[in-house]
Length: 497
Image (tube, rainbow, N blue to C red; front, top):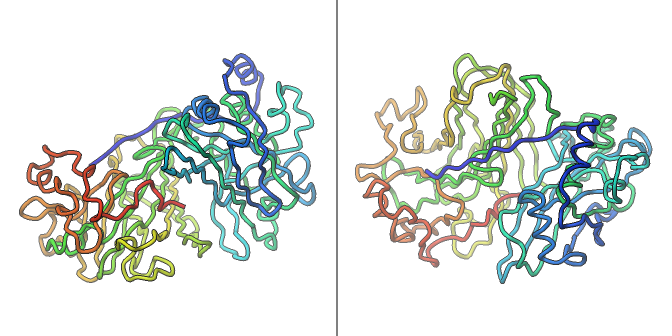
C-alpha cells in the first residue's frame, strides 16, 4: 500500500484589529499582485492566458508565495438587485482548470477551492448539490486596504500545484461559472452570474491572506457554507483538515473480479480513485469526515458495486449526506442527510456496468485505442455528534471493496475483513490473495497505468511477479517500469472533473 498524508491549518473569516496588525506586519513578497488582462466573460467563461501579463519566473514566485498554489483573486461584479446588492453579491464555480506546459508535456490541475460553498441547482435542473462560490462587495469602504488589489478584489481561487513552474512555456486557466436555476429563487438567484465580466488578479500570499480574513460580503450572503471556518473555542468547529492520501492526491485502487480465481489478471476490471478528508477541532479530534471518489476504468464482463467502508466505534453517531453525479453536465443526485451510528459502509457506485455515460465500448478506458472517458463521481460528508479521537477510528486507506454481482463475492485489499453475513464468510473465502500470494485488490500510486485488455499484469509490468513472490520486499518500484504498449495511459489524474 502507498500512503501519505498532509496536515494543514485553515484560517478564519473576520478582520479584527489583531488580524489586521498581523497582515500589516507580514513580510513582503517578491511577487507583486497583478490585475490580469483576461477576464471571466459575461457568458460565464474565461480562458485566462497568464503569460499575457507575467513570466514563468514570476508565476513560480507567486506559487512559492502561496505555499505551493497558484492563487487568483476575483472581483465579483454582479447586478445589485434582489438579494444581491452592493454590499453582498456572488457567483458559483462549475470548473476551474490550470493547464501548464513544461517542455512538451501539458499538465492539468483541475482541483481548486474557494473560501465558501453553496448548495444550489444547475439550470435547468432542480436537484441541488454543493459548489464553490465567490462572495464579494463593491469594495468602496475598505479603508484598511494598502493596495489596489485589496481595494477591488473579493475572494480567492486556490489551485494547488506540486511542480516548479519557472520553466513553463504556457499557462492558462479555464474558468466556467455555474448557470444556476434562478427560477427556484434563492439561493440560486443570489449565486448566479448576470452582470458583465468578472475581473481577475494573480496574487501573492499577503494579498491572498488579506482577502481571506476580510471575507467581504459574506455576512449578508444567504445559505453560505464556509470552507475555512472561523477559529473559535467550540470543539465542534473544524480547525484543520487532514487529507488522505494528500490534499491534492488520490488513492488509486484496482481489482481483479474473478475472485477466487485469478482469471486473465489484467487488473483493470475496476479502478477507482478516492480521497478522504478528516475535519479536526482545536484538540485534534475528528468532528467531520468527508471525501469523494471517481470511477476510472471498467474492463470486465461482470457487474459490480463499489463500497468504501470506514470503521468507527459503535458509540459514534451523526449525520451523513451523499451526492452522486455524472460528467458532461449529467444528472446529479443529492440525498438528504440521514443519521448513522457506528461504522459506515458507503455504497458509492452501484451497477458499474451502466455507469459510464454514452461509452462506445462495453469496457471503458482499458482498450489501447480508446479516448479517455470520464466516469461518475461520488461525494460524501459525515458530521459527528461528538468529537472522536483519530486513534479510535480505522486508519487510512480504510476499506475500499468490490461486490461482484455475478458471483456474490466481495473483493477487499489483503488484510481487510469481509463484511458480516457475506458470501465470502459462508464459503470461507476471506483471504484476498491466492495460494501464490497474488492479490485481487491493490492500492496503486497515481502514476500507475492499468494493463490494456487481456494483458496479464506480469506481462505489462515485468518486475511485478518478483515483487509479489518476495512478499513486497523486492522490486518495490515495479510500477515505474511498464511495457509502454501494454498499458493504458490514464495518469496525470485526467479522470478528475
